Length: 253
Image (cartoon, rainbow, N blue to C red; front, side, top):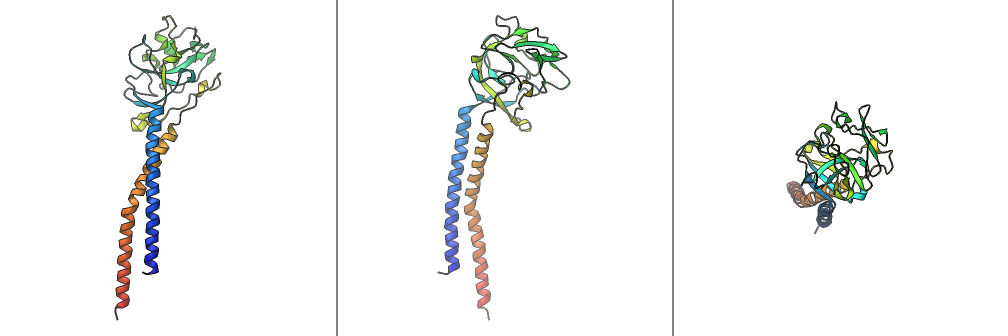
């Protein structure tokens, strides 16, 4: 057996081992990412346009399962409140227990007397359409508004309720981290910096980016590892034919 042939066989065995390791690691990352995501996140279909343009009617979102005590101002949450309806709803938290909410000062929503910048509102509109008198949010409850203020059935339309349109923190089921569909809107929700300087600050997004990265990396490794065998065989056959022709050429004459 020639040294060249032994070298080729050694390289082939090493390539096969590395290919198998890549496929195995890829499977772990791919399946692990899906399981991790399924444990942490729940997909929701949003039925109305009350959160437009952030989330339009028919959009699919990914929401991290969290407890109500983790909610911060500015979060877009999925919640259930029997007095508002029988289905999960999606709104933005603009006030927590103890906050004084009012609208409007120079066309802006105010929280504890401070005007809040809300760049997520529909272009050309402002919070003035809600017309909220100064309302104190009871302890342990949340004040929620839709980004499409003119058509959202939210806390502003339930001000006459016993709890002044607020919902309990334990009504929250999840926090929306990203829009998953349609693809042209795929991505993480922007952090609402208008609430950043308030007590408690902003919540941190969940590990969705890491989950997606694990799934994508796993898929690449599985496909790359699986493709190695056929590619290596084809290249090997090409090298074999090349050596055979060289040998024949040397033997002539």
